[in-house]
Image (cartoon, rainbow, N blue to C red; front, side, top):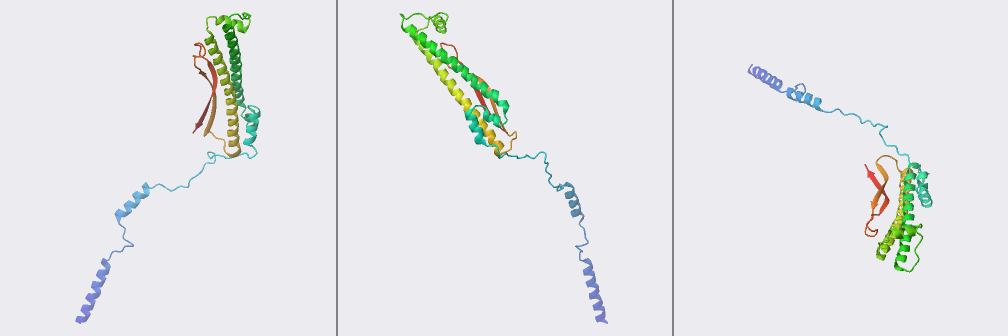
Length: 229
């Protein structure tokens, strides 16, 4: 009888202990569930990235457009390379720059020659006077108070300006050749977009006045500007 009572007590205690063991599967922690709700509200949804084909750069190089051809044409005739690249709007800039330098080169060459003639007349008082209606005669009358050295300096200054104009012509010729090569290279191998801009603008610079009797010499120039975005 005692054994039966002890056995029943052991079974009862075992069931009570089993009943007090927490059920980790079914039990829900309220705090943890609230944190999960808050995290799900704050977290950003993962969306698939969508690419807009309209905003994507299009690369369409032209393998038949040769930079070497553009360079050869620009070296032979100014602006021919730009015509090859279909940049017609650059022709007035190129020929305007070259034409300006040619014009000032002719003027400075003429002035250098006339100043030299007047200088020779000043050095030789016995030489006959030039025709008053000629360019040398008019210059002789305007420079009647000038000394021989001032006339020599004016002649040298005009000759120097003539040489600078020649270098300007060569510079414009070289710049338009480089321009033709760069844009032909982009057309041949790269995309043509607005990340790189190339601008040529006319300008004016003044030279020193010590060689022109206080009269500042004015020369046209071309400004080359590269812009990277």
